[in-house]
Structures are given as C-alpha cells and as structure tokens.
Amino acid sequence: MKSIRSLLLCALLAACASQESLPLPTAAAPDSVVPGTIGVLVDLASAGVIVSALAADGPAAGAGMRVGDVVQLFNGVSVVDPRQFYRLVLDSPPGSRVQVELLRAGSVIRVTVPVEEADTAPRG
Image 1 (cartoon, rainbow, N blue to C red):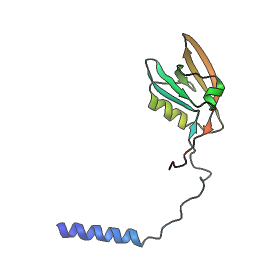
Image 2 (image 1 turned 90 degrees about the vertical axis):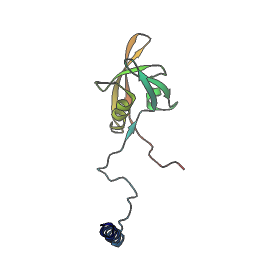
Image 3 (image 1 turned 90 degrees about the horizontal axis):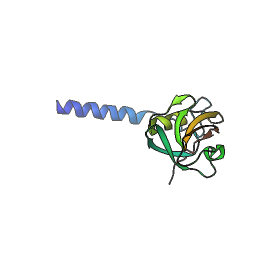
Image 4 (image 1 turned 45 degrees about the vertical axis):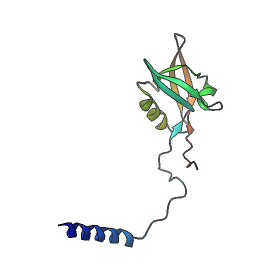
C-alpha cells in the first residue's frame, strides 16, 4: 500500500513538472478586483469600531475623520467589528466615495470619504 502511494505521488509530481509554466501577469487584468483603502486603523468598540490611527495624508483624515471616532455605519451597513469593517473597505472600489456615520463626543457625524487603491506591493 505504501509503495502504491509513493508511486502515485511520483506520478503526480512528474505530471506537474512536465506542465509548461504560464507567464506571471505583470499588471492587473481589467476585470480583476483591486482592493480599496481609506487610510484608517480601527479597534473594537461597544457600538462599532473606534478609529485608532489615521494616515496623515489619507482620504479619511482629509474627509474629517479623527482618532477616537466610533464608526457605526459604512455605506449604510452597521459596523460590528474590525474584520467586517476592513472587508467593507477593501470591497469598496477605488475611485468611489463612501458614506461613513461616526459617533464623536455624543454627536452623530456623517462624512463622505473617497476610496483609494490599496498598496498591495510586496514589502521587502
């Protein structure tokens, strides 16, 4: 039984090695998904997520968001945790504008934030 598994593994590896490798794409295809960003970091809050850091020259800072703001709604969707918030941001197309509802010092504030293309270049 062990030798049959070894033979199958060798056959699989040989088949994969004999395949011609395809060239890697150099640019994103027009129909590929490009992640968005608004330049914020958030942490969990009791009623959404709290802004813990902003990119100084990022879209969120330019739209008036501040550290300490609690994000309650993102494009009409209730924000429940950081993971969901980041997914909403990443799924927003670069070049679009999103409506964000914030709670700041007991007041509800609505801002419109432009979405930029997220930098996905490898760091090294």
